[in-house]
Image 1 (cartoon, rainbow, N blue to C red):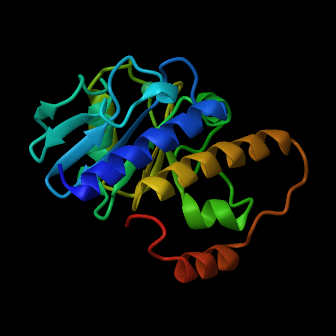
Image 2: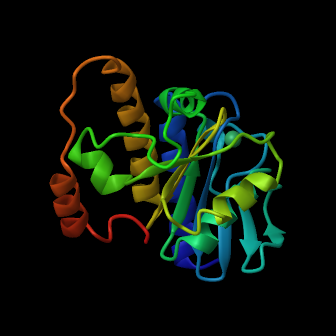
Length: 216
Ligand SMILES: [Zn+2]
Protein backbone atom coordinates (compact mmCIF):
# COMPACT_ATOMS: atom_id res chain seq x y z
CA UNK A 1 0.00 0.00 0.00
CA UNK A 2 1.30 3.45 -0.86
CA UNK A 3 1.79 6.12 1.77
CA UNK A 4 -0.93 8.16 0.04
CA UNK A 5 -3.47 5.32 0.34
CA UNK A 6 -2.61 4.76 4.01
CA UNK A 7 -3.09 8.48 4.70
CA UNK A 8 -6.41 8.53 2.81
CA UNK A 9 -7.69 5.49 4.73
CA UNK A 10 -6.83 7.09 8.07
CA UNK A 11 -8.50 10.35 7.02
CA UNK A 12 -11.63 8.52 5.81
CA UNK A 13 -11.93 6.61 9.07
CA UNK A 14 -11.55 9.82 11.11
CA UNK A 15 -13.98 11.93 9.04
CA UNK A 16 -16.64 9.18 8.90
CA UNK A 17 -16.52 8.86 12.70
CA UNK A 18 -16.78 12.62 13.02
CA UNK A 19 -19.88 12.70 10.74
CA UNK A 20 -21.47 9.91 12.79
CA UNK A 21 -20.66 11.42 16.19
CA UNK A 22 -22.16 14.77 15.18
CA UNK A 23 -25.41 13.20 13.94
CA UNK A 24 -24.94 13.61 10.19
CA UNK A 25 -25.38 9.85 9.87
CA UNK A 26 -27.39 7.39 11.98
CA UNK A 27 -27.50 3.60 11.97
CA UNK A 28 -25.71 2.30 8.90
CA UNK A 29 -26.87 5.17 6.66
CA UNK A 30 -24.43 7.00 4.44
CA UNK A 31 -21.28 6.09 2.53
CA UNK A 32 -18.06 7.84 1.63
CA UNK A 33 -15.54 7.22 -1.16
CA UNK A 34 -12.21 8.69 -2.27
CA UNK A 35 -10.28 8.37 -5.49
CA UNK A 36 -6.87 6.71 -5.65
CA UNK A 37 -4.46 7.02 -8.59
CA UNK A 38 -5.50 3.52 -9.71
CA UNK A 39 -8.96 2.99 -8.23
CA UNK A 40 -11.31 3.91 -5.42
CA UNK A 41 -11.70 3.48 -1.66
CA UNK A 42 -15.28 3.20 -0.36
CA UNK A 43 -16.87 2.47 3.01
CA UNK A 44 -18.25 -1.07 3.41
CA UNK A 45 -21.88 -2.16 3.14
CA UNK A 46 -23.99 -2.46 6.33
CA UNK A 47 -21.50 -0.59 8.46
CA UNK A 48 -21.94 2.43 10.72
CA UNK A 49 -19.84 5.41 9.67
CA UNK A 50 -18.93 5.65 13.37
CA UNK A 51 -17.12 2.33 13.24
CA UNK A 52 -14.93 2.15 10.15
CA UNK A 53 -11.33 1.18 10.87
CA UNK A 54 -8.79 2.31 8.27
CA UNK A 55 -8.04 -1.33 7.37
CA UNK A 56 -11.76 -2.15 6.93
CA UNK A 57 -12.40 -0.04 3.83
CA UNK A 58 -13.19 -1.60 0.43
CA UNK A 59 -10.80 -1.05 -2.46
CA UNK A 60 -11.86 -1.13 -6.11
CA UNK A 61 -9.57 -1.05 -9.13
CA UNK A 62 -9.85 1.47 -11.96
CA UNK A 63 -12.52 -0.65 -13.68
CA UNK A 64 -14.69 -0.78 -10.55
CA UNK A 65 -13.80 -4.36 -9.63
CA UNK A 66 -13.65 -5.12 -5.88
CA UNK A 67 -10.05 -6.11 -5.19
CA UNK A 68 -9.51 -5.80 -1.44
CA UNK A 69 -11.24 -5.42 1.94
CA UNK A 70 -14.90 -5.86 2.94
CA UNK A 71 -17.82 -5.76 0.50
CA UNK A 72 -18.29 -2.17 -0.80
CA UNK A 73 -21.40 -0.09 -0.15
CA UNK A 74 -24.42 -1.10 -2.24
CA UNK A 75 -24.66 2.56 -3.30
CA UNK A 76 -21.29 2.52 -5.08
CA UNK A 77 -22.99 3.21 -8.44
CA UNK A 78 -24.09 6.65 -7.18
CA UNK A 79 -20.47 7.52 -6.43
CA UNK A 80 -19.20 6.23 -9.76
CA UNK A 81 -21.75 8.34 -11.63
CA UNK A 82 -20.33 11.49 -10.01
CA UNK A 83 -16.66 10.54 -10.61
CA UNK A 84 -17.47 9.84 -14.24
CA UNK A 85 -19.35 13.06 -14.92
CA UNK A 86 -17.53 15.63 -12.72
CA UNK A 87 -13.85 15.76 -13.70
CA UNK A 88 -11.64 16.64 -10.75
CA UNK A 89 -13.82 14.79 -8.24
CA UNK A 90 -11.52 13.38 -5.56
CA UNK A 91 -14.14 12.21 -3.07
CA UNK A 92 -17.90 11.69 -2.74
CA UNK A 93 -20.07 11.80 0.39
CA UNK A 94 -23.62 10.41 0.53
CA UNK A 95 -25.71 10.92 3.66
CA UNK A 96 -29.30 10.57 4.83
CA UNK A 97 -28.84 13.71 6.96
CA UNK A 98 -32.14 15.03 8.34
CA UNK A 99 -32.60 18.52 6.85
CA UNK A 100 -31.25 17.80 3.38
CA UNK A 101 -33.38 14.65 3.24
CA UNK A 102 -36.42 16.64 4.40
CA UNK A 103 -35.70 19.10 1.58
CA UNK A 104 -35.50 16.21 -0.91
CA UNK A 105 -39.12 15.29 -0.01
CA UNK A 106 -40.63 18.73 -0.69
CA UNK A 107 -43.17 18.74 -3.51
CA UNK A 108 -42.71 22.50 -4.08
CA UNK A 109 -39.00 22.22 -4.86
CA UNK A 110 -37.45 23.47 -8.11
CA UNK A 111 -35.49 20.34 -9.09
CA UNK A 112 -33.00 22.49 -11.03
CA UNK A 113 -32.24 24.77 -8.09
CA UNK A 114 -33.23 23.33 -4.71
CA UNK A 115 -31.55 25.82 -2.36
CA UNK A 116 -31.46 29.63 -2.50
CA UNK A 117 -28.04 31.32 -2.05
CA UNK A 118 -28.64 32.14 1.63
CA UNK A 119 -24.95 32.41 2.59
CA UNK A 120 -21.66 32.80 0.73
CA UNK A 121 -20.49 29.46 2.13
CA UNK A 122 -23.15 27.40 0.37
CA UNK A 123 -22.26 29.16 -2.89
CA UNK A 124 -18.51 28.54 -2.37
CA UNK A 125 -18.61 24.97 -1.11
CA UNK A 126 -21.81 23.45 -2.55
CA UNK A 127 -23.03 25.49 -5.53
CA UNK A 128 -26.30 24.76 -7.28
CA UNK A 129 -28.20 21.82 -5.78
CA UNK A 130 -30.33 19.73 -8.12
CA UNK A 131 -32.77 16.89 -7.41
CA UNK A 132 -33.27 13.62 -9.25
CA UNK A 133 -36.55 11.65 -9.01
CA UNK A 134 -37.13 8.87 -6.49
CA UNK A 135 -36.09 5.31 -7.24
CA UNK A 136 -35.92 2.44 -4.72
CA UNK A 137 -32.65 2.06 -2.74
CA UNK A 138 -30.14 -0.08 -4.64
CA UNK A 139 -31.83 0.55 -7.99
CA UNK A 140 -29.01 1.33 -10.44
CA UNK A 141 -31.33 3.74 -12.30
CA UNK A 142 -30.28 6.32 -9.67
CA UNK A 143 -26.79 6.18 -11.22
CA UNK A 144 -28.30 6.74 -14.66
CA UNK A 145 -30.25 9.75 -13.37
CA UNK A 146 -27.04 11.28 -12.00
CA UNK A 147 -25.19 10.59 -15.27
CA UNK A 148 -27.98 12.30 -17.16
CA UNK A 149 -27.13 15.51 -15.28
CA UNK A 150 -23.81 15.43 -17.22
CA UNK A 151 -21.91 16.85 -14.29
CA UNK A 152 -24.10 19.96 -14.09
CA UNK A 153 -23.99 20.03 -10.28
CA UNK A 154 -21.57 18.88 -7.57
CA UNK A 155 -24.49 18.40 -5.14
CA UNK A 156 -27.53 16.25 -5.88
CA UNK A 157 -30.58 15.43 -3.78
CA UNK A 158 -31.97 11.94 -4.34
CA UNK A 159 -35.70 12.47 -3.84
CA UNK A 160 -37.04 10.98 -0.56
CA UNK A 161 -33.59 9.55 0.14
CA UNK A 162 -30.80 12.08 0.80
CA UNK A 163 -27.93 14.18 -0.52
CA UNK A 164 -24.82 13.12 -2.46
CA UNK A 165 -21.96 15.58 -2.87
CA UNK A 166 -18.70 15.58 -4.85
CA UNK A 167 -15.57 17.35 -3.62
CA UNK A 168 -12.04 17.91 -4.90
CA UNK A 169 -10.81 15.88 -1.92
CA UNK A 170 -12.18 14.08 1.13
CA UNK A 171 -12.09 17.07 3.48
CA UNK A 172 -13.90 19.35 1.03
CA UNK A 173 -16.53 16.73 0.13
CA UNK A 174 -17.31 16.27 3.84
CA UNK A 175 -17.36 20.06 4.39
CA UNK A 176 -19.73 20.48 1.42
CA UNK A 177 -22.09 17.77 2.71
CA UNK A 178 -22.16 19.52 6.10
CA UNK A 179 -22.72 22.94 4.51
CA UNK A 180 -25.60 21.53 2.44
CA UNK A 181 -27.19 20.05 5.56
CA UNK A 182 -26.90 23.31 7.55
CA UNK A 183 -28.21 25.42 4.65
CA UNK A 184 -31.20 23.09 4.19
CA UNK A 185 -31.89 23.63 7.90
CA UNK A 186 -31.71 27.42 7.42
CA UNK A 187 -34.12 27.15 4.49
CA UNK A 188 -36.66 25.40 6.73
CA UNK A 189 -36.16 27.84 9.62
CA UNK A 190 -36.74 30.79 7.25
CA UNK A 191 -39.65 29.22 5.40
CA UNK A 192 -42.55 31.65 5.03
CA UNK A 193 -40.48 34.64 6.21
CA UNK A 194 -39.35 37.52 4.01
CA UNK A 195 -35.69 36.74 3.25
CA UNK A 196 -32.81 38.56 1.58
CA UNK A 197 -30.74 36.10 -0.42
CA UNK A 198 -27.43 36.86 -2.12
CA UNK A 199 -27.94 38.58 -5.47
CA UNK A 200 -26.97 37.04 -8.82
CA UNK A 201 -24.00 39.47 -8.90
CA UNK A 202 -22.91 38.34 -5.38
CA UNK A 203 -23.07 34.71 -6.52
CA UNK A 204 -21.02 35.40 -9.67
CA UNK A 205 -18.36 37.24 -7.65
CA UNK A 206 -18.03 34.31 -5.22
CA UNK A 207 -17.99 31.72 -8.00
CA UNK A 208 -15.16 33.57 -9.72
CA UNK A 209 -13.14 34.13 -6.55
CA UNK A 210 -13.51 30.55 -5.28
CA UNK A 211 -13.33 28.64 -8.52
CA UNK A 212 -11.55 25.36 -7.82
CA UNK A 213 -13.15 24.80 -4.40
CA UNK A 214 -15.61 22.44 -6.11
CA UNK A 215 -14.75 19.85 -8.76
CA UNK A 216 -15.83 21.20 -12.13
ZN1 LIG B 1 -28.57 6.18 0.71
